[in-house]
Length: 110
Image (tube, rainbow, N blue to C red; front, side):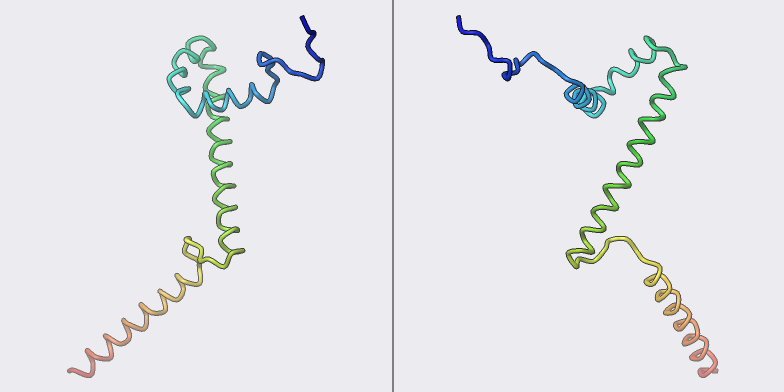
């Protein structure tokens, strides 16, 4: 039988990176079904802060992703989907002009 080379990794070797990916997959995939068991096994004192921390990290990462998408759109010259302050100021000015026009027409018609 030939010996295995030391440079070859067997398929059973798992490191911390793969463990992290499996953990993320567990949380995103069907992992939410494991939360009741986890709460009963670890207790509420440990499970609630951990769940809150995961929520905060998820919220922050989604904000980062949205910011990257917006920056990519700007770099490509595409319009940003969010409403800017300039647009809202222009809308307010238009509304004021329309109100003034209505008042002028009402006064002129009398």
